[in-house]
Amino acid sequence: MSLRCDMIIRDATVLDGTGAPRFQADVAVTGDRIVSVGDLGGMSADREVIATGKVLAPGFIDAHTHDDRAVLCGPECMTCKISQGVTTVVVGNCGISLAPARFGTRPIAPLDLLGDETWWTFDSFGDYAHQLNKQGAEVNTYAMVGHQTLRARVMKNDVERAATDAEIAEMAKLVDESLAQGASGFSTGLYYRPNAHATEEEVIATAASLASHGGIYVTHMRDEGDDVMDSIQETLRIGRGADVPVVISHHKCTMPENFGRSRDTLALIDRLGQDQSVAFDVYPYPAGSTVLMPWRIRQDVKVKVTWSIPHPEMAGKDLREIAEIWGLPEREAAEKLLPAGAIYFQMDEADVQRIMAHPRSMFGSDGLPHDSWPHPRLWGTFPRILGHYVREVKLLSLETAVHKMTGRVAHVFGIKDRGVIRPGAFADLVLFDAEGVRDNATYDNPTAISEGIETVWANGVATWQSGAVTGEKPGKLVTRGK
Ligand SMILES: [Zn+2]
Image (spheres, rainbow, N blue to C red):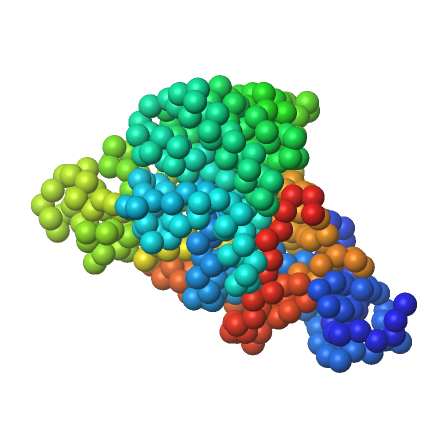
């Protein structure tokens, strides 16, 4: 063993990401790798970081993001994640991926969550991968191709119907090509109108090549409310049909009449999961956020507007308030705001906690980085779990919480040598104060920076230090199994 390395982080309380109990150690880094973990009194380094009293964990892997464009647009888009200790983001969720598609006009909702036509310029996934590797990013990116993107491209925006066999064959070919060019999975958003017309058979046929690439299937299910049990069955049938592991996105039970049903959904997932690989992600809030859908407005679910193209001044206001200002019924006010985004207060806290605590869960923010008044999960997810749910509510141990944002995510997505602290792993690291870490973002102040995250390194390079981004871009495209 060399006695000299680039950096030693000394006397840290190490949470290694596996869920194992914390231990006191020094961690040595050379280049982009951890080279040694233990009592390294005999080693010296160009740079020493004294971490006494602080926790050192693997950099957090955000299991569910819509950062496809954010990773390309610089620190102003990624500060929300780096400041929380995130070093890797999983993009291309809910059937929405920036590649492979080029659009001449604003894409249909919900694809426009990623931006207008000026951002849709990648004819192939390879072009996207090339751009990402050429310019670098503040975080590592793990990407999937989205079914809604493929439908909009192949069906030329005529998506309010089932795809023909020829269209399915063309989409399947694009999945195959994208996986060969560095994508790691295939996602659907069967909940959304453009995707809801797709049958189970269409999804299985489109995903035909996934197994040969070792890919993963990730889904925003067709229904998370009354029919959530059927949707879980469908999701798992698709996993079996395509012979691939499955991730259920942002698992939840929506609408007051379904509160408490996570007992049933988790039992069903556990039963079916005895015979096939299934996991799910969850964010730590009882409100969701997506595009504004007037036909889904209900009196008993509060809605807050997150952006509106014709009425940007209404971002941050409750729909009820906007309807009053305009003297319109809420549904008509919602129509007038389109295209727009919204937060829906549609879940039960007890369900959220039950899902978070379940052994199959992992954590993802589902943050929407281009919203003008975003859901606070974009800036607060990981510190909220570590501060509120671990320290205050005591829902989870710190070891388990860190595991669900590091080692478990890497395991489920097949991200090699990340999400753990051990010699040979990539030096994706976060140093934080377990007593002081807390989220500050709220529904009324959604972009407040969290506290307690001290330093973040991706591939051995600091991306966050002393409360500010460093401007470094050490992030790479990471691929399943590589
Ligand atoms: Zn979704």
